[in-house]
Image (tube, rainbow, N blue to C red; front, side):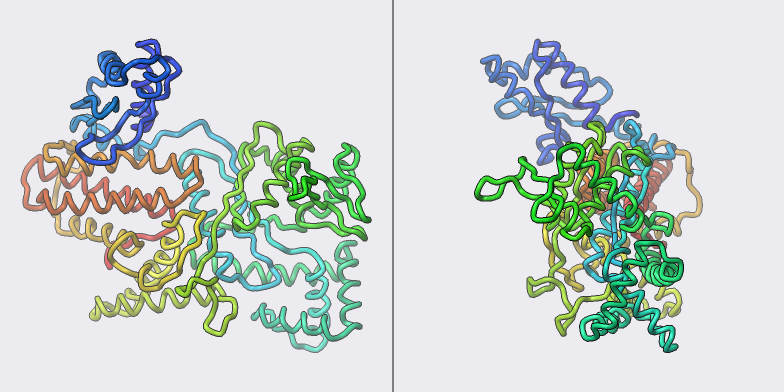
Length: 572
């Protein structure tokens, strides 16, 4: 199968519309809202009828006469003012399920492959990662996983903050600390706090820090070695958290602000030569007519500060040049806080005007909202401080361990710890990924660790429930074909067949919550099937067929959760 169900139905309905002289009418295929409307609904007839000044039901009748869904649909009928409701044949759905069981890609068609750069996580290496880095890290990782599964070449880019005045301050303090034999890089927050205090209170130290910035930018070997030492320790902290989160970022994916340093003066000179950057109050500024302030004046996009310093705006332009000219990206996703939306709109616009991003390269800001506490305010510690990501994940495991221990008191502690890690980390990630990323969301331990509703524990439990079925099976025909007779079987097969649609939507819209919603619906349909259709108590080909449906459901849940970066367990 080289099309999703929606694409296949769209092709067939468009052909029927063309056959009745409506070649430009959209098919508009979507899943039906209620079971009585069939499985899918074609809604394109009414617009075509209006354009032709026809009765929609009359045109729908003509389209239906030309619509070829032989072997695909068991029932096609007109409803309402001109909708076409399509119910898929059990034999066709069984065929899709059998294909998914034997196909390495589970029957998911691959679109034309692209080279996609995903810019995500991007912590400031001066400090430890905090909860503010969670959303970028796990949303970006999920998108990278889905895109790779869909056959695209994904290049992860961890655009870390590793340059600028603060690193002169930290390097100067590291020199001072080493001389005093007091190097405490194990706690980056404490190290940064002490360095900042020295910088603010001691002008001699502040002068030394500024000198370190100049030396760092000038390539001084000693200062550069100390700077690299600090970065190594910082990245080690990040990597430990990535490992705990199950995120695939590696050291080779790191390409921080410092990587573009040499290109910054080139970018500014190029913008000047193209007449885009002009001097304004000592700074180099691009005035973008596409963005006006309330007085109708073009907004300023500063690429070089008064005094010669550069901004992250300049670095981002240099990164576009690199991603287009060196990485040859077809698509670049920036998984960054939604509050940076204006910056990215302006940066993308200037990248096009300057010729840094070719017309065929897509630049997309994958924005996201803020994590809130249960008081509706930005998530903080009880004392009002920033929550370290390491502390949050540790608490997730502890809470999950308490839950697991309550349910499995006889289980060895080591096994409980393994389950607690998968459940706790999975719960934190899924609670985030299951929300529309554009929205703020309330962080609640109770709701995310619940075994009921749209949560990771519920889905993980659904998987383990299927695994428990197979532990009770002595033998069955592992090559038996799926045969669908019961409506609950048909509904489960239909849900399984929509896996490709869910992944395609995530890849296109960069919205992981569509995959979460799909997996929850699949788990719900499986529970209905399991209650309505005896599996182990059935016999012969019916038993084998139902076990094969269970097998495909388990594989789909495991694959889908894996694409979200969430572990499944054989027992909970």
